[in-house]
Amino acid sequence: MRKFSCFSPVTKLPSRSATTTSTLTSGTSTAIAYSGCCWGCCGAGGRGCCARTNGEGTAVARTPVRTARTTARANPMFIVFSSEFDAATAGNDGQLILLHLDRRVGCCFLRKSPAGTRTVAGAHAGMIFRPAIAEERVSRMKRFGLLLIFGVVFGGLPSALYGQPSAAPPVPAARSGMDLDKLAEEAIEWLAGLIRIDTTNPPGNELAAARYLAEILQREGIRAEVFESAPGRGIVIARLQAGAIPDPSRALLLLGHTDVVGVEPERWSTNPFGGEIRNGYLWGRGALDDKAMVIANLAVLVALKRAGAPLRRDLIFLATGDEETSGEHGIEFAIRQHWEKIAAAFALNEGGRVLVKNGRVHHIGIQTSEKVPVNVEVIASGTAGHSSVPRSDNAIVRLARALTRIAEYEPPVQLLAVTRRYFEGLAAIEDGEAGRWMRALEEPGRTDLAAARLGAMNPVWNAMLRNTISVTLVQAGFRSNVVPAEARATLNLRLLPGESADSLVAELRKRVDDPNVRFEVAAPSRYPAPPSAIDSELFQTIQQVSKQFFPEAAVLPMLSTGATDSAQLRLRNVQAYGLLPFPLTEEDLARIHGDNERIPLDAFRAGLRYLHRVVAEFVGAAKP
Image (tube, rainbow, N blue to C red; front, side):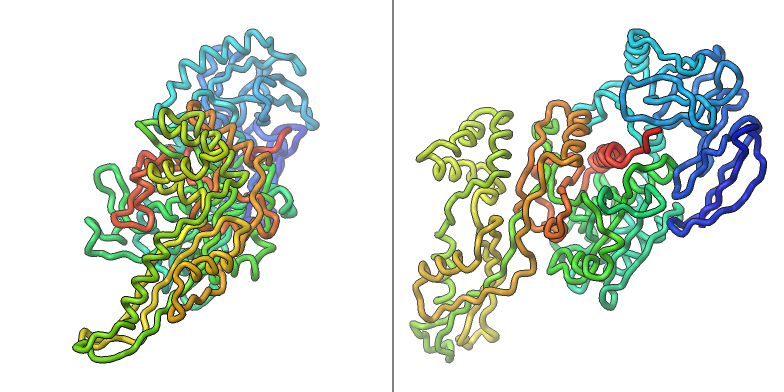
């Protein structure tokens, strides 16, 4: 339940302290009023409260009450906003001015609110504001000069690698940079704790992870709901609501999964589930896939909650399980049983990349589509018998021969709209041979050669250009002196959207050309989904924020070679985008599903700042 204090807008003095209840949020917070402070701005759903300035020029913030920094009022005609969310300042007549946030940079003026107070629009960190007569507009030239001076003084220089934004546009629901840095350190501890919960799938054990996340959210006053999808398995859902009634048509869903793939502990240099911090890295299974994303999403929710600014869109947090297998006990369960709680028009999930090359962010890949996984069993039959009497129809030898022929086959190159745009954009920033071969993909008669050369440079590029086949499991025999009657292998196919497993298997069957080898196609666990649009509001927001944080990097739509839960959302008309926000090298990314998985701490901090800005810009404070 949330408590709100009510005030008289006429006298600006506390007239009573009443308690109202809201079924939309949980936790308790109280807006504290001071003489000459409040004018009835408090609202439900965590929309924040007014503030005052004390005699020392300190703005006492909204709900919950915090201290935001302003300059001392040596000259009451001028106020410097030290963060995007200093809530109020004293006017030249001693009255207080409520700061209404506005995304329109440069729209800085005073005007009367319906309650008769004067409000400021467009304020952001480093801005000087001059209270004056209501409706007085600040000179554009003066405003530009002041912004330039204080931008240099307070803004600092952008980081070459980890992307402090080169400019500081208004972030509707941000706290001060110092607070976000502090939150990042808290989030690192949360991530370490989450890694220590072994959620290897199978069996999963995601319910323990869901409860762990729910406890963090509830401590922050955010109502979290845990749902058990199967014994020991579960999901957690939380929401920051923009209005009295949920609005899925505008909502943003932050999605991540808590289950992880298995490990071979003897191949690790640390405990895979120890959450150890060493040499600037946080080590452990799930550090990249996908517990860092889960915690970053959670931290963004916490940051916006702590800021207390009103939202223009509902923001939903969902941590699923079972992503590494079928999704039946994760995203499918959430959609099937709790769609009304997670329904949204937009979603952010794993699947993209912020790729670091030669010490700088080279490009940001925003996943708009993904390949479809299909498993196929290849089963070879032969004559069983004693190993002392070898036979020509040995099932293991027959399977080995079939797998060799399968490995020699390379499916044809297919350029989709998303991969065409990706390689066109990449070619513009790639130097030398790689850029030339990317441009050659479109040249008649050179596509196959170009794809082969690019695939030799980077296997990910090869996988983006064609259907792929990987042998992942082989099973045969049960004793060293017995020739088995059967041997089998599992092929993991990754199909381009729109491609059929049946047609690919038919080609493999023809190439193997052995009546004693059969193919069995497993029922698909994932289905092809339409791509997300590259002209949506969310995609454009990601592009804009990416350019602020990483001005020299290309921002490109991309096809992910791995499957994610986003496909299930796209099938339900959600514009879902993959944006793993942490600046990582190819070496870092190669540890996903591999040994010694880890995340650089600086990359996590930078990724959290970046993700926070994207979300804050998209769902940020309502315009006055």
